[in-house]
Image (cartoon, rainbow, N blue to C red; front, side, top):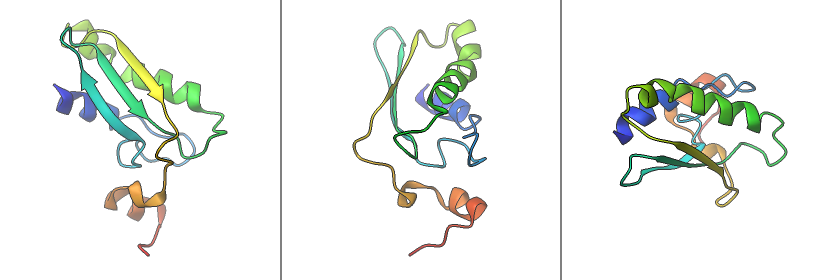
Length: 103
């Protein structure tokens, strides 16, 4: 089921960068408890990101269908700052899409 959650999270696009939050490396952990509630630990590209609320809302909306079919329970998103996000956390796809060169 965690794979299904990740697949849905790949549909959540960072509004500023135009790449999904999974490939950007913003999702640190996805966990399911014994009642199939989903706990997502993630970060943002910058601490002052004005779109944090939008991204969290988009995450919850992306998982609504799994909730409607009773595949998962409640969804909780926790934004953390440690470790801080870095361009090295992006997938190869995200780096190519954004023109980031490996260093």
